[in-house]
Length: 285
Image (cartoon, rainbow, N blue to C red):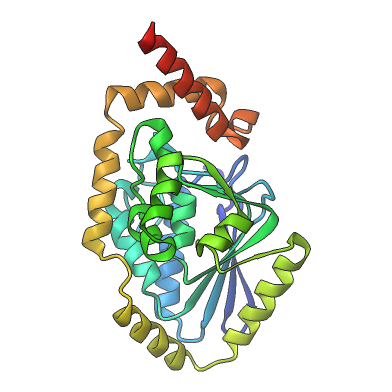
């Protein structure tokens, strides 16, 4: 068997500072191999007392994380300690969010669905004003979000804006995301990497117990979603993907090129709207 490169590259930038780069061509799908690599990373961060900060970025300027690879949802990769995403996501994301280090999502390109939900589980999010797009398009496919958007977004942006994001199933630019509180800041693309790197290097110089204590107390005052909440959300989408209407919408979108390196993937909220209009015309006829 030929060994394949990990889709998640981990670089030790300096003492206390790790950079994690998603590199899963052609469109940075969140698949079982990405999930396994992130679980291994989480174990490392739990055990390594030297790490203070981790930055998550992408090697693909068009996609931070495109979305879930729905066809491999129940697959377990050949990686030590790997698990089925459908059964383990709620436990993983609870562990990740509760790490005694600072996690920073540096977003360039599209991050939709579970990609956005991973970014929401990070402690901070910074986005390229020109190139970042964030979205939860699941409702357009006939299912609710399941990876945590229903749990994280209301606390960050408020109930009404969370419903706008979820119910519209549309793309949002970084400027709007900053205004809503979805991301910490929208930065000029040319400034994003330097800003995030400087912040990470600054945090890497602090005492890890102080960082962990501050994060723990903040979480006690403003609790993140519980593991039970996240399990309930993921159970809802697992049920919904079996609905005939959802299966039909996903099949139609796949015929248009969703899930591949196509225009339909780059701009699939537009295609979802067209599909909804076609379905409405069919029902009226």
